[in-house]
Amino acid sequence: MAYFADTNLLLLFTGAEKDLKSVTDMAYKQVKNYGMSKTFGHVSFPMDEEPGDKFAPKPFSKRLASLMDQEAKQLVAKAYKQAEELLKDNEGKLRQVSKLLCYV
Image 1: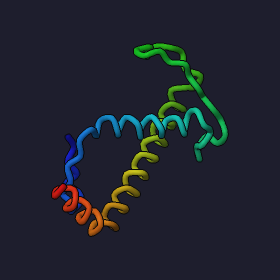
Image 2 (image 1 turned 180 degrees about the vertical axis):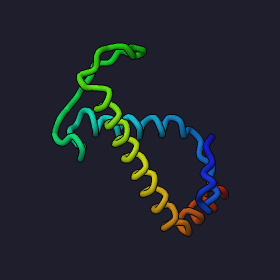
Image 3 (image 1 turned 45 degrees about the vertical axis):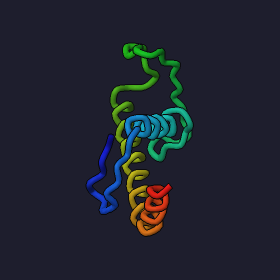
Image 4 (image 1 turned 135 degrees about the vertical axis):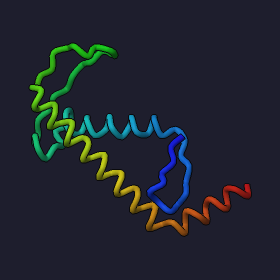
């Protein structure tokens, strides 16, 4: 269970681990696979990774991997900020819905 104390919404979220994994996977796919990177442009580095195969050769350098990590982190941070703004902008509506759901 994750609690986001940096908002005034006082919401509890469960299942956050799966959500965080999904958004992280999407960010890396945008950067590495789909050519949607500002830094690398329209280049794809698809990898057929087996689970637990951390030592498989990579088609890029450690420096490039580090840059990919930075860009994926920036994408996740941007998405978080947008979600946070959306929640804050719609706080009243969110409270109304949560009250209705509590009475169901």
